[in-house]
Amino acid sequence: MSGRQRELNLRFLAEPSDVNYGGKVHGGVVMKWIDQAGYAAAVGWAGTYSVTVAVGGIRFVAPIRISDMVTVHTKLVHTGTTSMHFAVDVKARDPMDGPECDRLCTHCVIVFVALDGVDGKPTPVPPWTPLTDVDRHLGEYALKVMDLSKGIEATMNELSQVAQEV
Ligand SMILES: CC(=O)SCCNC(=O)CCNC(=O)[C@H](O)C(C)(C)COP(=O)(O)OP(=O)(O)OC[C@H]1O[C@@H](n2cnc3c(N)ncnc32)[C@H](O)[C@@H]1OP(=O)(O)O
Image (cartoon, rainbow, N blue to C red):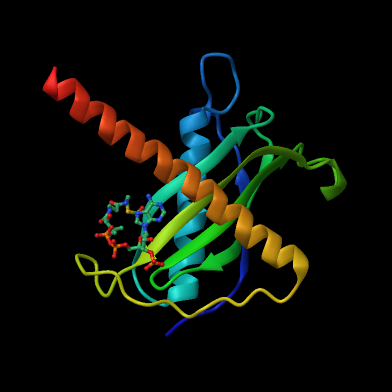
């Protein structure tokens, strides 16, 4: 049973255990939060277990401080046959301040594939149909980001083949 919802917010406080050597939240921790929020959004949309297949266009725009209130916002921007593409924004602010003080800290596109079981095969997802120009633009952006990372993957494969031949 799908709890179909296009947008999702995961909100929590950055903890001291999330800190890096410079006193800010680790990039890897931010990526874990993105994966967790993406997972909740994907299984909610698909109604089945889903796995991360790719992350693209990740940009760490501003640091997150310990004790900041963090919001990981996911928005479904494209569905393929079995894939779901989400635009993700991570924002943070001092919890004593209002929402207008939220700073954009990280953004990316993350893609999940729905499976027909935990060790299963890719399975179709309910389609998302863009209704506005902004939605269409977001979907095209997500596909462009993924095409770029697939291009990098193909180049890396070619290079490793060349390296094996020499
Ligand atoms: C819950 C978690 O966080 S899981 C932890 C991390 N993730 C994992 O362990 C997943 C490991 N990967 C896998 O198991 C496999 O690669 C799978 C199941 C995701 C996909 O298997 P594949 O054999 O590639 O399946 P297939 O070729 O049918 O592709 C499935 C979908 O993935 C999409 N896909 C595949 N590679 C990419 C890529 N590099 N970028 C974006 N989408 C991709 C395909 O376009 C397809 O989407 P569509 O059906 O909407 O057209």
